[in-house]
Image (cartoon, rainbow over all chains, first blue to last red; front, side):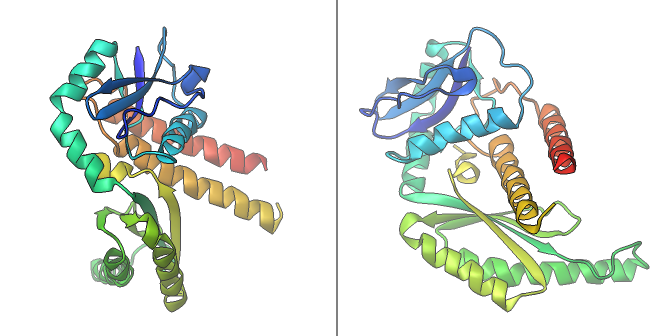
Length: 210
Length: 59
């Protein structure tokens, strides 16, 4: 079985000499302008845990240091190299276009948590609707200025509880400090919420359509 | 738990939730061959959250 970490540009660059999951050494397969980086495994890797997630993530982050990478979803496997090559050939145009779209850019995650003063059972449907409207307005006031600082953005449905916004922003590396300063400014302007900004991440959210 | 260690634990938790969002729901998918189905992903998510909670409890 082959576990794939990412599809990269600059195919002349070999895979870094470092281990991936289960300490297996990284290997790579080139197909024209694309390079897939992977590890080989004789057995199934068993139950995924947090360490395995971080191991996958660290490989992608290492690749990001000297090339553009479309990160694979965790758990992307193929039977063998022939199947991997078929995938690269079949999706060549889509993968190349997606790589061009994320070149020089990273993903930042932003979540807004609002403390609820009115914690406890919701008294009425009307109050529930009003509180949802307040959440939406609060999220817009943060999302719109951040989206203006980004090349692209995606909003995901908030998970409920304290979360009122869950967004991903594709940001030019050169605009990273401007984006972070924007987050800080918005945090100061909205002390009633907590704005959590993580990253830079590999652009997982913006690679999912490729 | 001191304030500092609580902050670090909290930050790790924040990063892990963000990591899960990306690795399990984003990224390029090789058609049909994903080892984790959506239901499995939900289970992984739940068990990792349980793991975080238990780690927080130990500290």
